[in-house]
Length: 103
Image (cartoon, rainbow, N blue to C red; front, side, top):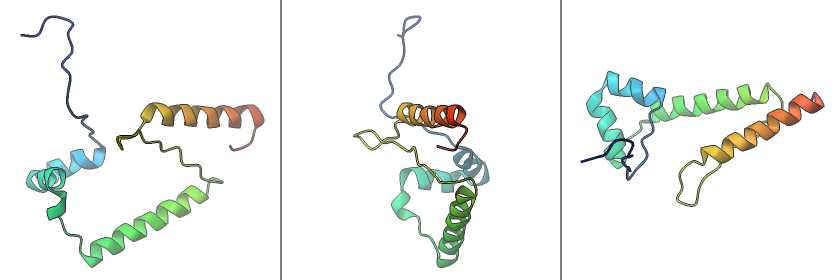
């Protein structure tokens, strides 16, 4: 039994994005397969073309606001290091504020 104020340690971190949330509501079985058996999912040529177009649009959008700086950081275990990403973003934002230029 857990005492008051004690935390339960989880073995894996859960990540819930807007896309995952919507996919669960649209098709719970499909979302389950994507999460637990991603190797069973196949992407058709039409779907891949849409993904590629989306990536191109994203690249163009990023270029509209000056040089793009990726602050994505990973830990040794492969998970995202959000603390490092926030520190990097904060440093870049501070430089932009103090110099009047984009980082």
